Image 1 (cartoon, rainbow, N blue to C red):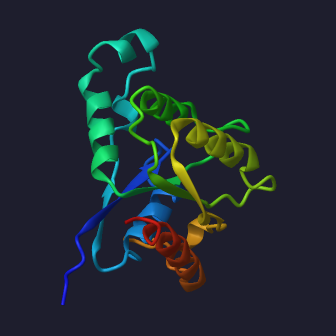
Image 2 (image 1 turned 135 degrees about the horizontal axis):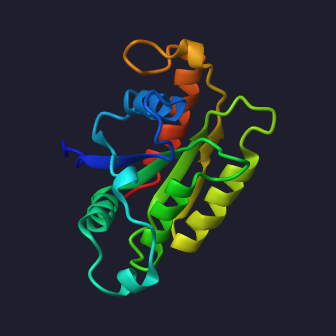
Length: 182
């Protein structure tokens, strides 16, 4: 009987807000992982310098090297981000810009969960995320790109969503993403 090798899912939020719904969604996703998967929540979003092509060509600063190392070490990436002023948050766009020149995202399976309950459902943000991820060379797993409205009132003390229906939909997305790796 062979043992499946351990795999890693990198969780990336576009939110810098403490107690974010997006972070709660990613914490919930972590609880739904298949048995041979672990999750790492990327926490360096606010430490990344503004993208600068001149720096890109030289030795990138430690926060950029740490970002790239986390991506390289992962087998797949799950995003969850708010929408600010009708677009992707600048901090997340900045993070993604640091990945383009290095090709660290190339071929990496990615998905996202859009928890927005706003009338426009953060459509602009996720359209932009899809565009930028396409430029990075990531492999977008359509079945792992979900709109799952999350009611902030159902986030429990552990920081996860307590709605069983939401948990099951998140689990389906996570399974779609994790089943696309080899």
